Image 1: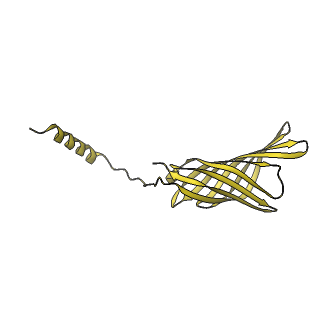
Image 2: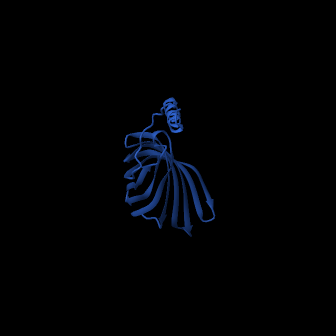
Image 3: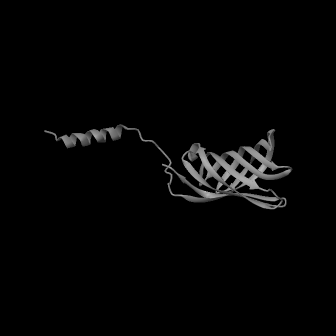
Length: 170
């Protein structure tokens, strides 16, 4: 007489052997610090409208990211400029990036949302904001992350820097 436990083990072994194996990339779930930079190649205005004292601009941009996350990108930017009389007081920007990206040897598209604001714009300023990965494809489908954005403007020289943390969810 065969024991019930032995039958269970044999059935489980048969199921495991009969199940086709799936090859997958083993991602680490450890958090990695990242720094990458944006270089704008071209910007095209899609629309401009006035709503009261606010000037709303939508534009498309193309460019390149370099650093820990790298690749060419396209983006849609919505910019709202708030005026008090003729003085520009505040600019709020949201930008949606699609990056044909590489990160740590993995490839795919990354979708990143960036939000930032400029108070009392001037020639020399530092703008701060926040970015977050909202999705991905290919090897980057499970990459998640967020961080800080800093835009340094000194005369005609601009540096657009992203710093933060990313990790793969299993």
